[in-house]
Length: 128
Picture 1: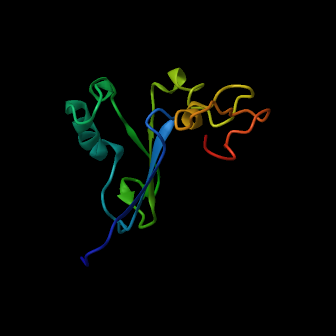
Picture 2: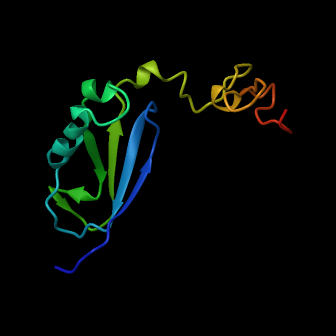
């Protein structure tokens, strides 16, 4: 078998609804199941990271594409790891802006309060 190069793309935030992974470069015919990924995800529970959340969270990767009947297709493989604690973060991590609500991500880095809603601009015109 000729050597191949893997490319990994990731998207998502730790408190968002899910993390998404795209893996390119896996040849067709490689045996792969969600169960094969579980041991590597379980290593996170051993304590690697800044916080202790990883010790209580049990991650599960769901294969969304690129695998059929237990074998890779040669096309990119899409994986999704859902955040089971998402309901507690839905408001804080919402994609939609909430009118007249301070935008903590912006205001934390600025000397004045900025607003995420459409009633007030959320980007300053100049630093103060």
